[in-house]
Length: 320
Image 1 (tube, rainbow, N blue to C red):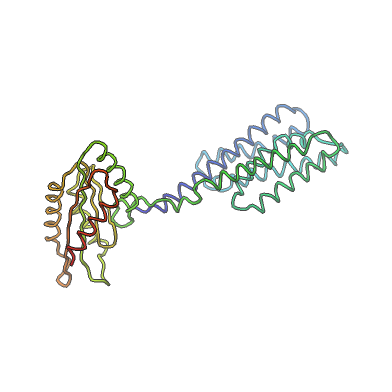
Image 2: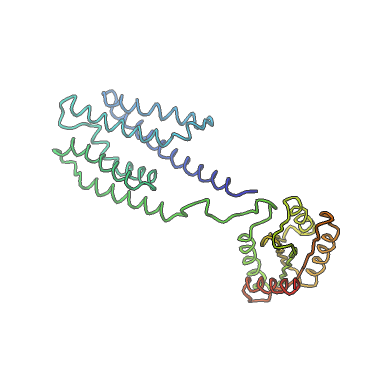
């Protein structure tokens, strides 16, 4: 099982969830302002904005992928429409200010937070959008006592906080730990190390035996096992393990097996069973499969990776 499609899918779900949160927040604000200003002409502007947002939300619930891909764009367009409409009210009615512009200034911190999240990887675009937003509002409200400076400072602080939080999070889901080997389906070496650290801590605390088995297939330097033969070796190992045991393909020719609550004599018996299974493999007349197996028992208080190093040294000596 390949973890990369899984990571990409998780990233898409996170982006969709964040965009949907922004859409619902703007929809609620537009509905509240529509109700507050009804039946003025400004309330109709909020109605025009809220209806498309509602349709996009319904399309998203229906599973339309086109809606999921354009949620963020819809929120941006709604903000632009409100901003442009505020200009139209200001100059079309020859008023010194407009209720719509004052409301936009009140919600400016939320707009800053939205753009800081949406354009976290495009800082120039983020600051251009925020700059244009406040230039338009200042143009309309400069003559009023709206305390533009306080709204501006608060919005910038929120944008910086959101941007810092986004950058402090794990930057790339695709760069996270691989969970499974794409060919064998076994846990990756990273997962094996994490499980080893966990099991060894339990073993040290409760004085339980813990053993490792190393299985190295001796191959010519330029050769490797095809996927079907590699999976046959994998099955020979996993079919003999308990649910509490963990096996992984440590490198191109080596398998590691973690056996919790198992002394080394019991691990040796299991290793002999795996060796016997490999001896019955027939990969062709021109292919000779040589397998070296070693076991080691974890010592209480020992670094888990030191146990792995001891096992690798045993395998190296067996391969000589």
